[in-house]
Image (spheres, rainbow over the protein chains, first blue to last red):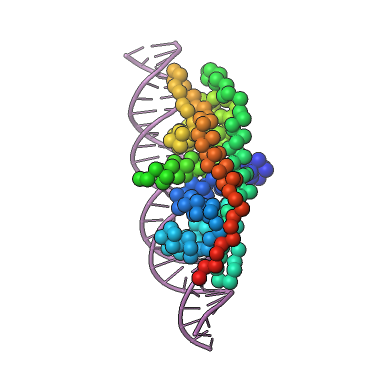
Length: 105
Length: 105
DNA sequence: TTGATACATCAAGATTATTTGATGTAATAT
DNA sequence: ATATTACATCAAATAATCTTGATGTATCAA
């Protein structure tokens, strides 16, 4: 796979992870502090299996870190991956005014 | 629906639109100029119906504009919506260092 | 007015993502 | 050792998304 396409795939996976409302809620909560799964369960009123599914999803998109402490798993944001996605979008801002399309015949 | 949730829904819809590899390719092409559907078809080697589906998707997420000229539909980026999404991500960058989680019992 | 072109939309099927409830595993407490 | 807690994983069911080919609509050209 060419590396530009590979990049787009990784970028796309990041955006996909951010496309689910529950995952966005998880991220909003993690933006104030690291939390363990059971705390997220309570705060979001969602069952544990469902939460594990979505946390795995976020983790695979590199948007969160996890660390184990005893029997608790603590999740926190991986801000550097947020910067990667932000940068992708920011590059569009620097575009020249979109040129008018040439005639199509 | 509370407006914070409404916002998250709209943000999420934007990220979802950006999560598909073909749609990202469309966006990359539109970042150099406005294009009509048939030009996108050629450049991406994708059938027209499929392209219409994805363009509609991008349009519903406010990521592109479209304008008709004769029998051609020209699509171009709506950069202001890119800024909205960029800003959402940028806000995370300004977070204080994530606090260590309190013990969970 | 007939035909061709550019595009949208639709219905059916294929693929992927999500939810649920059950089970597995490791750490801790008793 | 046994039981409990915190979490991951699995399989089955459901739901959402995507693809394909066919059909519809508007515009333009002959």
